[in-house]
Image 1: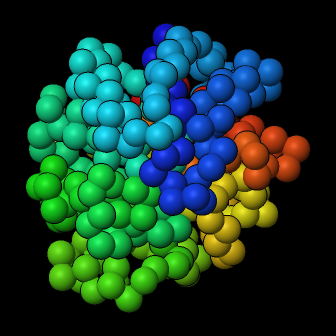
Image 2: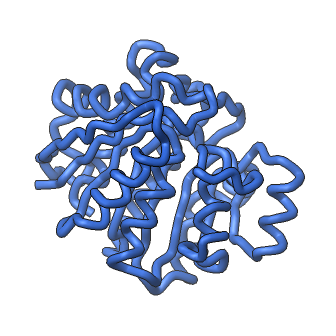
Length: 262
């Protein structure tokens, strides 16, 4: 049975994430209504825990997220919430596994100026500046909108990244094969739903056209899961308030189902 932990927090979304705090419950709702097994034929069996967080207090909420992950003694899938929740989650994870590879699927690199406490726009920069994530142990997949300062930081820190156009030209099969050829350690996996094209995932705070397909993402997750190196997963930035016909929440449930036995 997989542990699902909901972190219903939108306080780090800078206004764009308002409504993402509703996602954990809605993803679980869609799992119960629509998903019976994953594509490997494994039954979707889970235990869901919802953590109460203070939307008005980012510091206290992030501290509780960190402590919750730090004290986990089993594998789990963390359900956000805006992408700021990844910062404390990774901090907690790093207390148990200090040397790991951070793989993130995201339309944005989230490397804006270090605005501590971390927001969804700079959580990764905070993790790097605090020396929790090593830049050379970081891979970003699906980038297609970035600030010039973020591009500069990516190059200065030698962070590995693949744009949506790279995936279009090379194919996800080749991209994932290339990534896996360079990884020989535990993986923390973070999935921002905006990596998927808004045609399939409209329910999110930042709409970025030209994204990858849900099939490309699911294939990539399945291949990563096969390695046995994934040790923690988070899924963030689904916003039920901005969704249409629950399509994005259902996709979130599908993603969880594919990772339920990682």
